[in-house]
Image 1 (cartoon, rainbow, N blue to C red):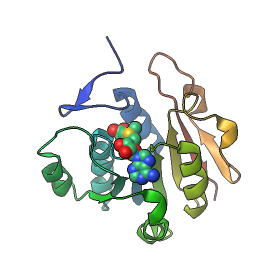
Image 2 (image 1 turned 120 degrees about the horizontal axis):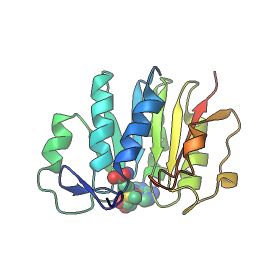
Image 3 (image 1 turned 60 degrees about the horizontal axis):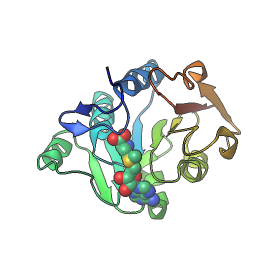
Length: 175
Ligand SMILES: C[S@@+](CC[C@H](N)C(=O)[O-])C[C@H]1O[C@@H](n2cnc3c(N)ncnc32)[C@H](O)[C@@H]1O
């Protein structure tokens, strides 16, 4: 089976199903109260993170210059899940993101064009107990580009797992 070019709700995934399972594992037993996605793309992961957010009594905040692909009903799906989509350069929305987080433990997913810069810009905004993930490590950036002081790696044994091409690194901010 091709584990990469699949779709989710008819939307081409820019990740794969394994990522959903790893996000579940990472979030289990963690009192995460905020969700932020940098890079909405086609919106498939936004739907997954949006569902996690609803389960925890909050909503996903996600950014992109524009939604990718032709999905006439995506706006409606986002509305039903209370997903807040902002069409903008997220680097200009640092203050808004900080207001959204409000010192609550946050899951922040870096998936724009410059993951290392995203990680290094937004990681310092996160309160203790937060989890930050950066997609496509090893391809688009190397670990030594990330400023990880104060963070501990999670699930690192899986990061290099080629079978599922996870290649998303996760770090938790220490208390
Ligand atoms: C790989 S896609 C995101 C995929 C999505 N997270 C998923 O897993 O389904 C990256 C997206 O980030 C957007 N992007 C990159 N840099 C950005 C920025 N600085 N501000 C807003 N959007 C950005 C691009 O337009 C592109 O759609």
